[in-house]
Amino acid sequence: MRVLIVGSGGREHALAWKLRQSPLVSEVLCAPGNGGTAAEGRNVPLKDADIPGLLRFIREESIDFVVPGPEAPLVAGLVDACRDAGIPAFGPTAYAARLEGSKSFAKEIMREAGVPTADFQVFEDAEAARAYVRAHGAPVVIKADGLAAGKGVVVAKTVDEALEAVTEMLERKSFGAAGEKVVIEDALVGEEVSFLCLCDGENVLPLPSAQDHKAVFDGDKGPNTGGMGAYSPAPILPEERYEAMADLAVRPVLRVLRERGHPFVGILYAGFMMTAAGPMVLEYNTRFGDPECQPLLMRLRSDLMECMQAAIRGELKGRKLEFTPKSALCVVMAAEGYPGAYPKGLALSGLEEAEAIAPGEIKVFQAGTRSENGRLVSSGGRVLGVTALGENLEQSRHLAYQAVRAIHMEKSFYRSDIGAKALKKGGPA
Ligand code: AMP
Ligand code: GLY
Image 1 (cartoon, rainbow, N blue to C red):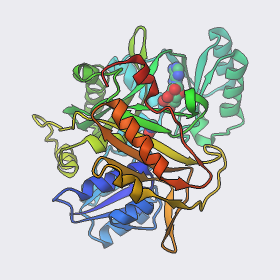
Image 2 (image 1 turned 30 degrees about the vertical axis):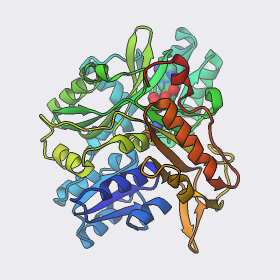
Image 3 (image 1 turned 60 degrees about the horizontal axis):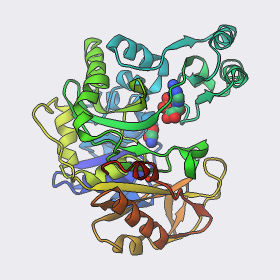
Image 4 (image 1 turned 180 degrees about the horizontal axis):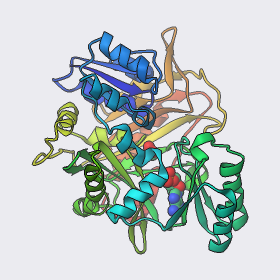
């Protein structure tokens, strides 16, 4: 099979790397891809949400299977377009992807499905929203309804901050159409954990738990990023709880979508806050997380292509996903300045040396990279996702940082405390 992966991040490199290992896959193509996906197959210069362009290419090149990585092509209807053209694509339709594409839609579905989540109200009118904020008090959370590249959430500590966020989104329209509606919800306190499930519309197979590190600096300081590192499993959500978590937050959502005539196929990612009152859903993503995908796929033993095909065919019942019991940990190396403005074209070296430290146990996934005259240089904010397997979290962490130190990248930085929170607790890693 010739497989087209859509996207250009570390997640897409991990998908390309894993899918290429399947005996069912003859070639992996990636649109637009990066330096890492180019090494796994072939890059195609098409934007990830250019649905007509992608569809033309899929037809012309007789692509057999499509795997959208990020949310944009899902929300823009790539899976629907492929389905209409008779080409299997792994992921939700545009309707089901609204679970990620519209926060008010997600909250409405959660309410209907009885999923525990923060109390909320939806506003389009700035004056009404401000009145609600004043009556509610702080802390309170303001969320732009649509996709805002991870920047549309303000956890306001004061009423003034919350009022400012409302005005920014609903009046100054700083998020454009994505901020024409806002969700205002109660602030929750606790530790966050990522819980991803493979879904075929009806059946659900949980993947192991993972934890992301969203803040840019050590100690969870500084602005939020796309994710500075991740590890799996996360001791805060141990394996014996996976089925109960799927019953709480994934199966009920699948039921509601099925009843609406829009079954959810693909990866449903529940972002949980583990509060004192129990787990509550902060958000859904309708795809693999980036960087959670990197440690998760390092641990996956099953054939990913076969799993994706079974999901599309509605044949997950009775299947099992096999994962190594080892821990996997990913450290993101980023360009100085990220998530703000950062330089591009930074030289990179030492990737092979890093992987050679422990062959088969270390993989340097590339995100913002490209090849320039045969030389690898940076082209994005998050540049590499250095991922290692170990017998436990302490070992995967040790090995990942050893690999990071073998890599040279000018003007780069990384968090030095990925996984530290879990180790301090001394939980079973
Ligand atoms: P979301 O895109 O909804 O996951 O929000 C992004 C981040 O904002 C989350 O990962 C949390 O760190 C934070 N956040 C979102 N909703 C809440 C909430 N209700 N209470 C506290 N923090 C939140
Ligand atoms: N790592 C969080 C996300 O992919 O949305």
